[in-house]
Image 1: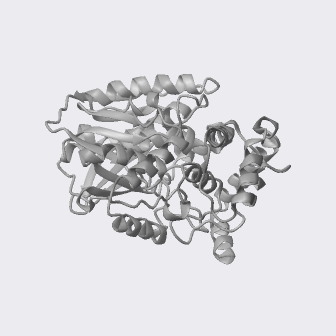
Image 2: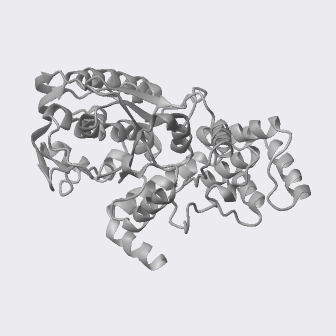
Image 3: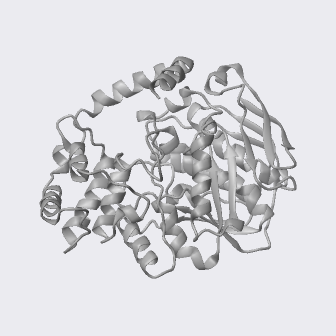
Length: 424
């Protein structure tokens, strides 16, 4: 079992720390020297304990369900308590091969209610969150960015860059932009990643509940009842994912409402929406779609995600270099390397590339980077690619190699850090 002993507010009321006791049988799943915490840039010390528990449980309960241990706490918000039961059922459906169990034991259930009607949006600076902002801009939403999600806590250089880029965006109301720090990806060990196939704990299970859960104290302080988290996929996606309407919109506390926003739009549609917004407004937007170590500006410009986003902008008739990119020469050659004989394409990647291919088939023109004739030929070649012939090729071999590499990296983390420093 896991027993929460107390919740502590410190650092001028901005930090919530959780003191918990672990049964020896489950200690191997947790970094006992890095207990879970959340650090806000506002004083949230007046948050009721029944709401202050939500960031903790949003991260702990999925581990409890997949490992199968019970969690003991003192009090909890009534709405959130009911939501956890619904969320557990969703994960049972998403992961039929896992024996999902584990029970939450509570002494007191508390009913909470907020009086205001403010709106918020989780904000990463990527295409999904920026597109969501363009549709909710008239509501002047609170924007919340979380350090420890996409950027590691110790990576202060990249995080300071992120904040600098936010400060440069004229579209962002700096007075309504909040920064949160949490070790939500560091309080557990690599054994948690091994609970799901493909080492995808953060993506397949954790991130929707985790990101939304840390907002609970802020929602209490600022009377935020409407919470938006930008969608990653559409209803065309059938594989399990930790952020979907059935997960995110079951995350509720007090009288809040969470919306999995933009679920009706493909990524190419979102690129279209952002381009239209920029053309019809006074603002420029610099998208930040990747956090690769090789990145020197807004994006690395070469990873798969950068390539797909840049292509979506090109097909929307826009110059990617005006939206935060600095594409290399031979961009299309880089794209085609994804489909060579040694490539690996999962169902998820196939869906992403197929969306772009479908868009390419539907447009009469697209933005030309340098050479119209060469790029027209390249686009036609892209349209003719048979993704079914690439999907799952070498996948089992690559997954096995990835798993071995992952375990070695986690078990010998110090040596890996030394290797990274030498490589740099």
